[in-house]
Amino acid sequence: MKFPLPAFGLLALLVSTSLLADTPRPKPERFAKEIEAFAQKDAEKGGIVFTGSSSIRRWTTLKEDFPDLPVLNRGFGGSVANDLSVYADTVVFRHEPKMLVVYTGGNDINAKLTVQEAFDDYTKFLNLVHERQPKTKVILCSVKIAIKRVTQIPQVHELNQKLETWAKENPWVRYVESTSYLADAQGQPIRSYYVDDLLHLSPSGYAKWTEILKPVLAEEWAKVK
Image (cartoon, rainbow, N blue to C red):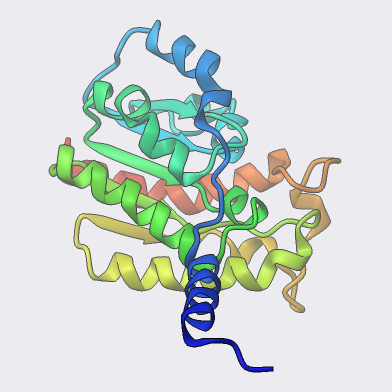
């Protein structure tokens, strides 16, 4: 069956538009109460802000793990990179950080975003930070793997590769590989590094992450403090 040219053209347009349509992002409004709670706190300025998803929010020993550094936790669990852009004024800019440690990306993949969409959202946020506060040094932590999301491991590795390459092109960003320690020789997540939900880090998981970040933060803080 042959379509008349106008009808075929319309069909092609509809198909191409659907292929190009962005994956819907989770609604940022779901964090309104958490962000308001942050806004009500004193704006500690000039230190090191940690922000991102639950891996940051659940880092309850952050100050104890980095006792010699002025760290501040502004993570909110379940967030994606787009949420960081939406709420950047509250979780980043009001604190005027000399350094920003960011962890996000896993929830983006889990929300069915493509790797390219997750990358675009992540770098959009980081570029926003650099535009607004160009002297801030950004520490970009690689996206972690998890037992609960084992089928997403290939996408995680692809996203990390894109982020690492991008970071090398931007001297104000330092990429920190903090994923490989979570995997065994076969590339599968090691059980002891996760709590019972098989998604979030256990105390030993955070201890290893701390071990990786400590020399990086000490080196970069000495440059910017």
